[in-house]
Length: 185
Image 1 (spheres, rainbow, N blue to C red):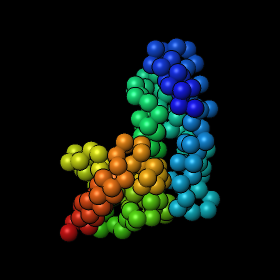
Image 2: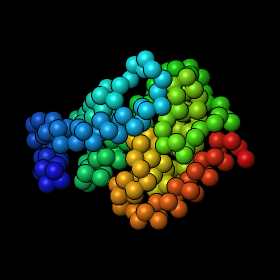
Image 3: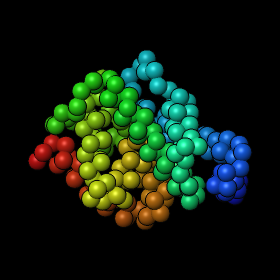
Image 4: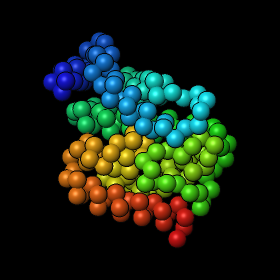
């Protein structure tokens, strides 16, 4: 699969017609699993399904105007996690209709996004995560993969090419930093 993905990725980088469409079947199941994990905390009746989240994220990733050059499968998955985060944040902003409030309770240990009836929590996390990215981009990327893409610690470590121990230390520090930022303590 990685060889097929690398070939399709190289074709997309060269601008070959329909190359981006060849990528989707190669990663679809993996992206759908990521989306399902990200939406697991959603309340029944949610209008955004894992399939819809995957398709929207994929459209954003392969949009000819903004398409970035991916360095491989792991980089593509990280970009997909970031696209999913943006989509979920946009959805939360629409639902909240206001700025996030400080002091919102965000459970980073659950590895899931907050339920949609509390979009202010997701907005508070997004704001704090953007601040963290300015201080420690690697930690922010790890949180993004764990929290928004629903990857396990081991999966996220592999995606970022970190040892499991380094990922665990980074996760612990990132959670503490985000908690302090969100709660103002």
